[in-house]
Length: 270
Image (cartoon, rainbow, N blue to C red):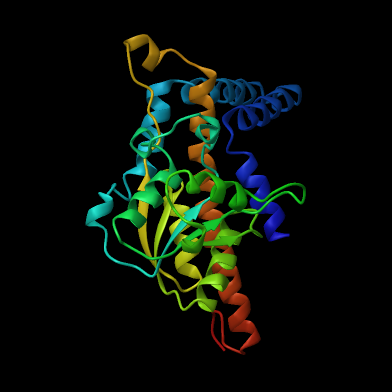
């Protein structure tokens, strides 16, 4: 039940979907003669999507997550037992005839590779499952990172995960089998707050290595005129906030259940 509610809450973070719910609620309110409330809900619904389709507003929202973990030069990172690179990145460069690691500023695999080349950790864990057909994402990542100079002998593949919580659970299982305790966690700066939360929750010592995503720059019009791309970027940020909140709720619920099973009081007077 809790999982279903979490999924519903996360789905409503996409601005057009929440706007549609507000507009529908406004129409229903107007139909039952709550006309003022109905008009307000419709205006809120329209305004919500309009606001987050403005590129500058999308960047402000995303920055509130991205600045939680500033980027650190790979050579300045502390040493760890392994580097964990999460799936979900862009692998389009895998099909280029020539590719240089210096051209991949926004690539998770390139960031993990630079940390490995700098001697920060001897092993790279590639974490990403599949849909049951074809190769896993981790396998695709392994083919891509080989082009950047990382040998197969330095890789461990985690191929069962389907979401961030799975990434953490299954990577931790793999880590324990290889006596890995401290990791350099590589994912996008936007995703890092939620990812680091889950990885810490499974007992790993996490050093965040955020990868910046591209920003919308240019003229005044490109920053302030609404676009579909800005709406998508805003939706991703709201999804991260909702996912982080859901993760904390799930953790609290699991802790409360564990206390009940152990016979501990969960609150109130006895």
